[in-house]
Amino acid sequence: TAYDSAAAQRSKADNELKLEYDKRLNDIRREAELAVSGQRTLLRLETQKAELKVKRQIIDEVYAKVIEKINSLSDNDYRDFVGRSIAKYAQAGDKIIISKDEKRLDDQWLNVLASRLKLQLCFDNERHSDVGGVILRGSKYDKNLTVSALMEEVRKATESKVAEKLFG
Image 1 (tube, helix red, strand yellow):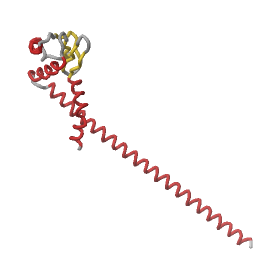
Image 2 (cartoon, one colour; image 1 turned 180 degrees about the horizontal axis):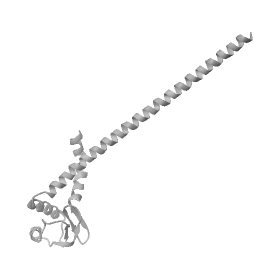
Image 3 (cartoon, one colour; image 1 turned 180 degrees about the vertical axis):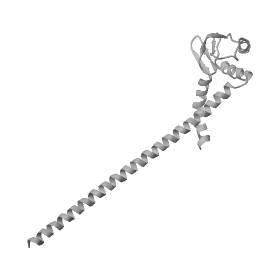
Image 4 (cartoon, one colour; image 1 turned 45 degrees about the vertical axis):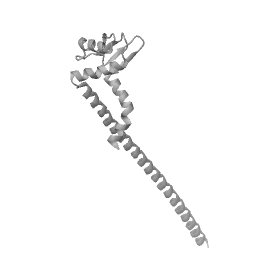
């Protein structure tokens, strides 16, 4: 009968609609799971990035404190520190550029150092803007022995060990 045929077609259409609905629902669930997974990955990466930033700041503070300690050495210890740096690299005729705020390195200190090294050394009129240490101005090259430059060399050689000690 026509009624049975219409009912069968309606039932078939209902089944097709149900299958299409289930397929789309599953597709949406998969997309949602992928989106959530992607957000979790982004969150994990952002967390790692933030953690790395904090670790970098802590390591920066370690080296900044070392610079503070160097600059807060007693006058004699500071002079010895700078003198040892100069002794490694100085050549006859070098000029020593001191920092603009330097008060501990004077002519008497330089004369004693030059005599001990058996080199002719003098202060340059120019001043550097670093927090301490000196720059050796030579005829062929300049050697940066400022506290920041020396600390940068030390940092390159020790940063991984420092990070390992701090963070395991």
